[in-house]
Amino acid sequence: MKITVVGAGAVGASCAEYIAIKDFASEVVLLDIKEGYAEGKAMDLMQTASLNGFDTKITGTTGDYSKTAGSDIAVITSGIPRKPGMTREELIGINAGIVKTVSSNLIEHSPNAIIIVVSNPMDTMTYLVHKTTNLPKNRIIGMGGALDSARFKYRLAEALGAPISDVDGMVIGGHSDKGMVPLTRLATRNSVPVSEFISEDRLEQVAADTKVGGATLTKLLGTSAWYAPGAAVSGLVQAIACDQKKIFPCSTLLEGEYGLNDLCIGTPVVLGRNGIEKIVEITLSDEEKAKLAESAEGVKKTNGLLEL
Ligand SMILES: NC(=O)C1=CN([C@@H]2O[C@H](COP(=O)(O)OP(=O)(O)OC[C@H]3O[C@@H](n4cnc5c(N)ncnc54)[C@H](O)[C@@H]3O)[C@@H](O)[C@H]2O)C=CC1
Ligand SMILES: O=C([O-])CC(=O)C(=O)O
Image (cartoon, rainbow, N blue to C red; front, side, top):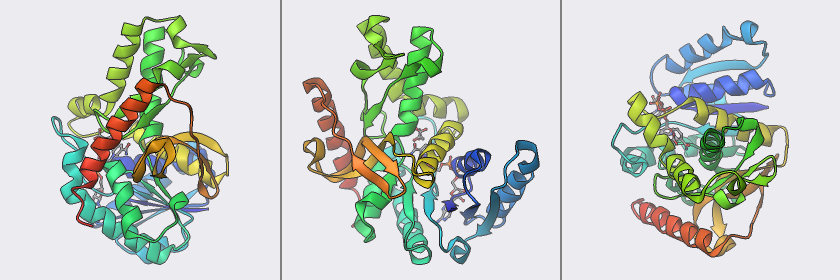
């Protein structure tokens, strides 16, 4: 299993590290445009192999896509991250051009690859890859919901005073400060609805904190987060590589599902060796449906800024 990660920055390197530590891939290629950067990150990571006990071979290249040839999965993390006070949507001007070029180069050398889009604004970048490549929709996956759900579980565990392993929950909708839809109604502690343990007001606070999870970290760090994003991408990559058939919320092209069309937005999907093997349509309450529709409007507005 060969995996390419484009962008050897904070998220790309973290993602490569988690993939290697989980030890399910034979090869990870890091590619960046900054001279020597990907080679350096790859060498540094390889020097953790004997310490962390993995056999995945990590190599780096400065812009040479021939080194990525024959990749089974390719992750796009190239592009600029936001600074405190910015929205993800403000990154579109620079990142759209980068994502378009990178996806085209990737496909030229790895025509069968499954593409995972991470660069922000992620839902719109995922849509851009759909619009500018001829790949079938199961092979273009946007990563956002897996990360947002991990943050939701962190906040739920905090509110419940429970271990995170006891908590389950999912965030659907757009990967944006306003557009995320944390499904508090369906969140559970060891299969018991969380509303049995905490008040509606506290749950609303959990949802609000989840939605600004990325902005909160950006304010603290001066740039956006990388550990949880890298771990979330590695989870998606592993589900595909190991044909796990796990459900993750991912940004996917909708064609009527949830009453939505012609956009990529986060919904639960089954991930396996063919990428998105099924879009799972769960029954939403009227309130959740309205929130998802509003989120979709926001994503469409950002999509409208693309020069297609
Ligand atoms: N979807 C999600 O949940 C998340 C998305 N992100 C997004 O991921 C992106 C990367 O974030 P970081 O890794 O923190 O940024 P970073 O600045 O640390 O790394 C980005 C890397 O991309 C490289 N790059 C730029 N143009 C390139 C090109 N044309 N080809 C190859 N490499 C190129 C840069 O040289 C840099 O090393 C940002 O757009 C950020 O907003 C970050 C976290 C979570
Ligand atoms: O907040 C950001 O800009 C980066 C990101 O998407 C996240 O960490 O959720």
